[in-house]
Image (tube, rainbow, N blue to C red):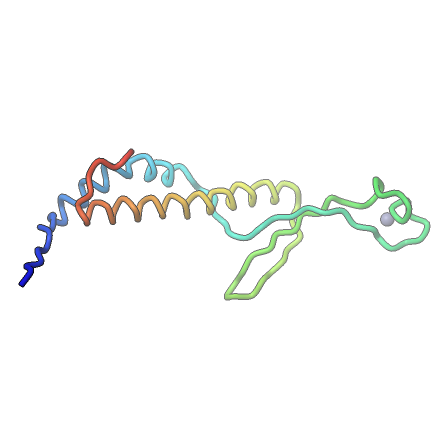
Length: 123
Ligand SMILES: [Zn+2]
C-alpha cells in the first residue's frame, strides 16, 4: 500500500514572519492610501432642450461636462452628479480601491505560498 506523506507544516510564527517579509512593500502601499471608494466616474455633456440655445445645433456648445459617479449600495446602483473637484477626489479613491484589490490578491498568494512551503518566489 502506498504511503501518503503529509508535508511538515511550518509553524504559524514562521509563516507569519515570511508573509510579513514578502508583503512589506504592499503593506506600505496600503498604509500610504487614504481615499478609497468604489464605483465608476463618467463625464458627459448635455443638451438643455431649449430650441434657441446654441447647444441644440452646435455639439461644441453642449453643456457640461457633468461628472456622474455610479456605485453600488446594498446591491442597488446609485448615481450622483458631483463637482469637478469631487470627481477628482473620487477618481483617486477609485484607483486606490482597484489597487487594493490587486494588492490583496498578491497578499493572498504570498500567504498560500508560505503555508504550502513553497520557496524561491520572486519578490
Ligand atoms: Zn443649451
